[in-house]
Length: 285
Image 1 (spheres, one colour):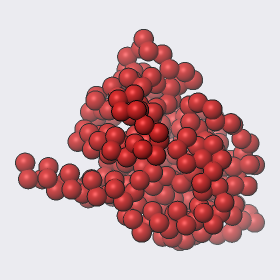
Image 2 (cartoon, helix red, strand yellow):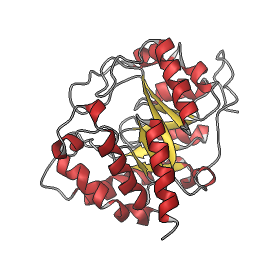
Image 3 (tube, rainbow, N blue to C red):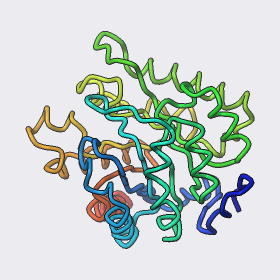
């Protein structure tokens, strides 16, 4: 049971505190379904902002085989997103979070604000997903340590720099984040790393990360990859976000082969099927 703040409702019983190794014991990666309750997310902004629409989408993803629901109330897309206050994030989450938690699979809160993450954990979320990898909000690491919940540490940059070695930059970023986590008392068993496809990277660098993903294996931590509908796909095959299913699956299969253990996607059933079939075929090699 997640600890609650005085005056809050008790956390829902669906929160799952198993460590990543326990969750990742099956042959193919966990599938994290994306639920954006925002007006301006790059792929589905506004579609699930209404609580009834968001809950229907969450139910659909659970039925389709999602292992985790990742719910975000602030768009963090690199271009054109509008920052919102913690109060606004919570206002968007209030009508829907408890119902999503009640669906029975772990819920991840996608927020860079510790106050929002704390509120969500109080109301049943089980995982923190920080797009700034514990390096933006100085209270985030302490909160995660106190709650003993899993955390996704994502690589990010203020702007893309085509002249850097992106893999070196990611490795340095992760080293800093892990040091922050260690000093705060976060267990390594509660950490997963996300190289942040599309965040602070050129389109070429996003593809480089996927091609060189295995270089992150020395961290000996589970890797999460979210290439779903990302812009780099359109540089290879011109397409709108909702037309990038094929490219998304290709990227996610490449990432899985390179060691990714969690796949974050907008397209749950197709991704689940692709991962299962690819894994079955690889097992025959």
